[in-house]
Image (cartoon, rainbow, N blue to C red; front, side):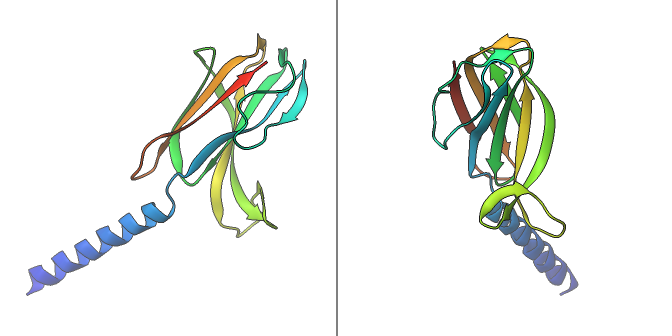
Length: 143
């Protein structure tokens, strides 16, 4: 009987963890904005596939958002890996995504990728989900 109770508790715990991962799964990845010395700051509409302005120069950063929980994000510009220079939590603040106030529920993360000294080209970011599901990817043609 004792073994049955222990087994039931372990199964219950495993199902609870699985449900927690499923409810927090990685649902979306997209480019939020591009900032460069050549093109300034350009917010990219969700689903946008190219920039309206030319970007590049001494300062050049690409900011991506992931909704849900992922890990191992990798970004490339023209096939060359980029370095992640900032990683911050995102929360629902008044119906908009923003920095998390104390006690708020985290719903995603924002990453800033450094492409300084380069010009535009094809940008791609891939994020792997925590738990179940497939990786999510976003691409952007930067002029």
